Image 1 (cartoon, rainbow, N blue to C red):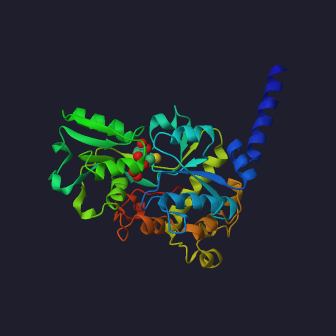
Image 2 (cartoon, rainbow, N blue to C red):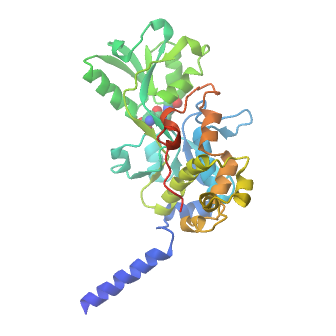
Image 3 (spheres, rainbow, N blue to C red):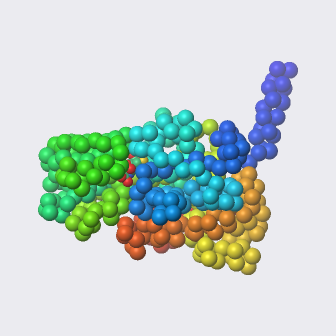
Length: 341
Ligand SMILES: N[C@@H](CCC(=O)N[C@@H](CS)C(=O)NCC(=O)O)C(=O)O
């Protein structure tokens, strides 16, 4: 008797579970009620996230948020941008001050578990490096013994820096400043010999120099920094939406769907993978609890992953970052989306 009751309860739960696309939760409910979501972004940084002359946010990390807004609301402007620092970002996400971080946060075990977060797919595979004034004549990180190093607090950067110097039996003096503008100024004013951060951030900082050619990002890569959007534990549907929006941008690049041709592809492509991705064959939108045009809207708003990359970070931008391992798996990189089916 007791057994059968338990069984019935379990079966009811299983059926209930099957009737929704995923476990909807408080975060997505609040976002829907508000009609916008809160995108946690770093202090303005070239390429990654900055405000243009009209005050509008632009950049690679911003495009990730715009893609999510377009997938969710069919409108890339339904975003409230919240600036966070390296120190304030995690409390901001935990408290609901932001719904997602899109700010060069590295995916690590402790953040993914202990801090209570879930990481969407990596949008940029990076590694930590060193930015130095050329006139210092330093050619390798191993020549930095005794250096004064500018570093942001609460970062993997801070931890790797200590590991690297210890492992190589070198000493350093940290200059720790939370405000990104201030730490950049400290570096440019020579208050530290070297600035350390993710190499892609160093490229952005270098581009701010009065003469970027006076500064060099050393070839050393001292860590793995997979940078990914982050949400908090407890709302699987919101997590799925952020996750699959990133994947959709990658799939679009893989299948040759661009911002310019997306509408035409949606109606004319005979490729079943494209028909599914762009909602011509329904099902993917419903699976996520979204409109069937979710991916089409995201791609129309910001372009595919390659277009986003080229526009903000690529060789033709001040950051001049080659695709490298951030290229698609079909082109020798490690960017790979599971199938949208
Ligand atoms: N990826 C590292 C470093 C993150 C980091 O430094 N991010 C932002 C702050 S949220 C930043 O200001 N980047 C450097 C800059 O652009 O000055 C981490 O997640 O700990």
